[in-house]
Image (cartoon, rainbow, N blue to C red; front, side, top):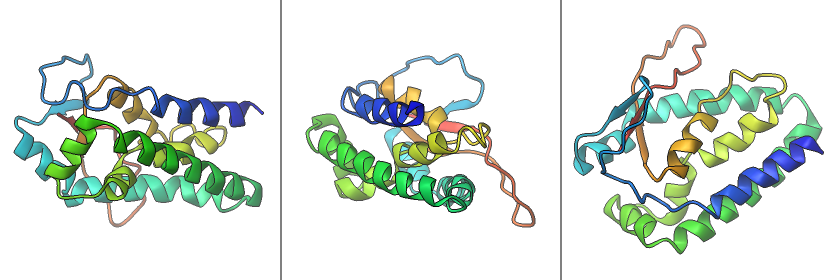
Length: 172
């Protein structure tokens, strides 16, 4: 029941976000792991960068490996994932600032929503009892709540062995 409440509360938060209200502003975060994109063009480049995609994929695969070992968690993840995805599509589709950003990226709402950390965060929450260190996606959520865009990632991954991505994000 606690997990169900955590997921439901998390999904509910999505509806209350003022999407990208501080995008491009000089909002200061006291976090040494954050870098600022110096322009919208730079932020857009970071968003489509291979390194951000790879880091997200590694983090996604890490929690997925835990979930697939338990049928109960897998079914719950699928159900929660779908609820979260629907909520994201609905809220992004009604946000003028989100639609403007999505349009500037030449993406559709679904493609954009799929790259946001919310869907991955659902998986991390579900495995948090077993793998609390899996927090690549959940760490990004407070930044979105504050109205900024986590547009990229900076770090190194190791193709020889599993290295969970550090939380070195680029924001705009």
